[in-house]
Length: 207
Image (cartoon, rainbow, N blue to C red; front, top):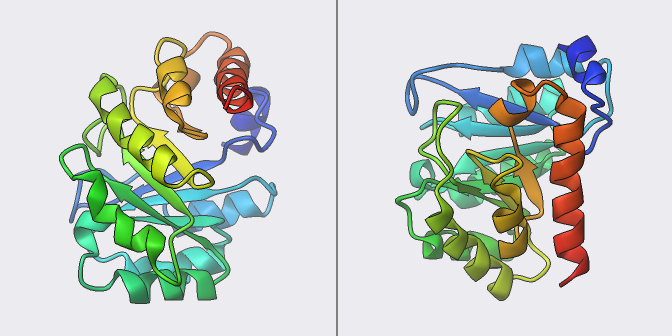
C-alpha cells in the first residue's frame, strides 16, 4: 500500500484510513494494525473514520497505532460523546464527528459548541459502507449551514467525490475531501488528486 500511494503522487495532502465493522456496516477495511504499519513509513495525516456502534473500544488501539484523527458517528454516540472526545484527545488525536445523510445537521451543533469540541465534521454524501456510490448533492445544504455557522471549522465530505463533483463540494465550504474510487480507479491518480486539491484551494481563496 505504501508503494502504491507513493506512485500516485501521494505527498501528505490527504491521508485516509476508514475503519468499518459489522455493527454498523458490513465490511471491514483498514484497522489499527494497518495504521501502525503505515505510520512507520509516513508522516501523512491518517484520518480514521469509524462506522461502528462502540467507538470507545477503538480509541486506545488507534491512538497507539499512530492515527491522526478519530472520527466517530454522532448516531452511535448520543449518550457518551463528551467522554469519547475527551479520550480521543487524551490519546493525541484530533476528534471528528460524522453524520449520515438522513441525520439532521443540527445534531452535531452541540459537539462543535461544547467547551471540549470536535475539531472536524464529516458530512457523508452517500450512505456509509460501500465505495462507488453516487454523490448526493442535496447534502451540500449541510455543508453550507456548517460553513456559515462555523467559519473556521474543518468540514469533510465523503462519498462520490471526483472531478465531476468536487467543485460543488468545495464551493459549498468543504475543505477536507475523501476520494476513493475516483482516485484509485483513475488512469492517472496523481492528476485527479491535483485537480481535487486545486478546486478546494481555489474555493477557499475566493471566500
